Image (spheres, rainbow, N blue to C red):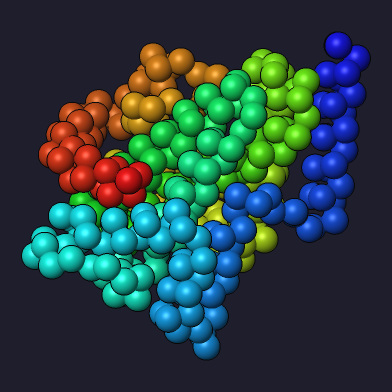
Length: 286
């Protein structure tokens, strides 16, 4: 069995290494709808109706878009929205991109055969939503960037890990070994994440912010997206299952980065944002 496990690790490493070397990343099925929506949103000749048509082709995403448009946060008047077109207009393109990725990550977690990978994918999804809504709250307060953009970046921070989970699921021995899976993801997540984001042709500022999410400029309050993402990630209550640091270690790093008094300000900000974050989590997670 050890030989089989080692051969699977080597085989998948060679496949991913070859993809990165060629510059062509093969997007797994769970990301296809997100990619189509992203490409349509970037097309200057595309209309909101074109995007609505793509969403209609994805039943789960359609239901989530309608639900999001009718949430108390986006529809305080309470007049029901029952069609995809008006729902797209109400929500906006950046939140729809985020929602498409949320739905894709949830589908991945539900479709996996390995119970070990299911648990990891579910935990990673919860962590990503936690970081995304914290990023939204911080951006809204400090005006570093549009809050919807911060939420999208927060979700995309772990796109490489979701991709690797999908690929690992094809290798049964590797998928059943949590320690080897964690080691494999830790080894490949940065180059794979960077390649995926480049393939998605995202703006340079988003690429740099996501890729350098472990770096911190040392200023509080945050003055750029990278610092904002760093704080949102470290303060997240839902841990990344592939992060080797303990909660105490993450707290110590955050305390050091916030220079003492910043921690109180952050706690107060997140506490005041709790009701809205809870509404957002319910809205995007269904």
